[in-house]
Length: 204
Image 1 (cartoon, rainbow, N blue to C red):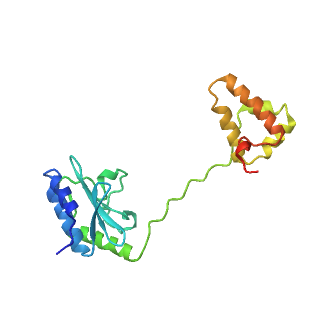
Image 2: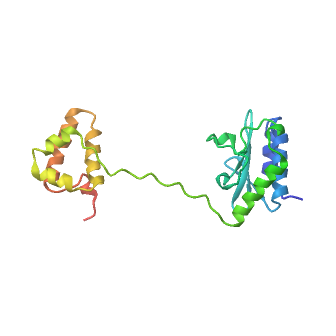
Image 3: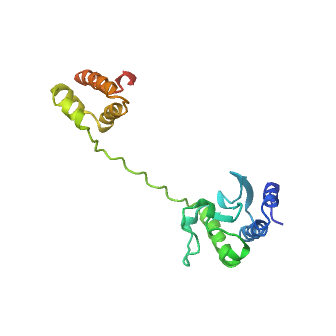
C-alpha cells in the first residue's frame, strides 16, 4: 500500500472534474515506479520526494501539469519532454486528459531515471553568472569637467571600475541639471583629495 498524504488527497478532491483522473493516474505511476516516494504539498502543489525533490503535479483551471525537478538531466531521445519555458505547462506540456499523456511505460521510465539521479546524488549544474563588464562609459560632460582638473582626473582614472561607476551613477540619477551640477562640484572636491564617492561609509 503506497504511503499517501491526506493533503494530496484533498488537493485532488478540490481539483476540476477533468483534472481528477489525470492527477490520480500520475500519482499511481509515481508510486509504481518509486514505491519509496514521499508525498508533500509545496508551494500549494503536490510534490513527490525521494532523496530530495523528484517530480510534481498541479491542476489549473483548464489544464494539468507534471514536471520533473531535474528534467534537464533526463535522457529523452524521443523528445517527449517539453522544452518550453512556461512553468505552468510542466515537463509533459499542458495536459487536459489522460489521452494527452505519453504511455505509462514512458512516464515510468522517466520517473525511474529521476530516482536514479537522486540515488547517485547528481545535481543540476548551476547556471553561470553573467560576467559584469568592467568597461565603464564616462558621460561626455564628466570627461569635459575632468579635463579642467588634472588632479581630479588622475584620481578618477585610477579608481577601480566599481568606484568610477558609483560616481557616474550618482551624476546620472540627479533629477535636475541644478542637482547634477552641485554633485559634479562636490565630486571634484572629493576627487582632488582622492576620495571615492562613498568614502564616508568606508572603514578607516
